Image (cartoon, rainbow, N blue to C red):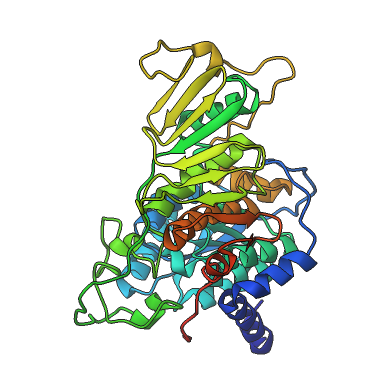
Length: 443
């Protein structure tokens, strides 16, 4: 899509904004009318893809973008030709780094994400913004036929996530959610999920997920707005408030900003790392395109200990000794980014049982060992298959994080329907009211 077609461009953006802004009831209606897609594996069928060098634009050039952009440029068939950020210094730094790495001046500064998405040269859009800015560029890029790599958590609300997943599916683009634990970290998470799926610990009964707490409302003091920052552009759909460098650091910074703590822009530490660890739990359960049935917060009002119950009776608990711990009738598996072990029973003092984590044999399932999350995405584009963490999978994982926060906020048991993506029964109205949020009018 090019700038010579402003009517269609504006129409698509309007669709994205409207979809993200509507109340949860609208999304329930869509879910009921739109048949649930058939479950797909994390590696799909291949089909022919046209040859040619892939050109990409980056939306948001903060710390995370600087961590991953080289992973794209490591592929000789890939180039980054556009960078946009709401901070002028970060846009300039992105352009400088890319051109320095590629030893040319092919990469240019874009004035904002819209210019990136509507650039007719661009095949791939990389979204590395704060979480509250994932939906708009991801939806518009998908509807424009661009492939998308979007950082996790995929969405701020359940309504947003469903819209992103539907947009990606409607145009058949390749969409990778940045939940890289499914293909990196020495494949420790892959091996854990694989062992669970293969019944190596017997019948699975319980999973614990060790991640942070829910978010809090933003209470930061307002500071003078420096030159070179588009603050309205940073806020986007979020409520109006004054500038804070804790949310949007000045210049090129070397830390993860504090917006992750606040409900207006993220879903707290629970979602920040939960988007990684709940993703692995869903994978191990074979529930990539579904979810739990019950959401049961602790009766004492604590902000840890919430329980999910799946249709088969498996419980998943927010809180635990490791990132992911799987308890089965014949053993336990613990996995974190630097830790993988299995043992018989549930006593952590038990000796290791390495046979539980041995390579699959015979007809056992073997999950993919990707070279990297980015490499899998680029290969998926070339080969015409789904990457390992599609928009649908990313949405379902983000939904777990959002269900957890909703459960804590409502403070009462909730019954969730993963097909209609609506709460049912007692307390349903309170839960459904939190599946979408108002969108501030912004350009």
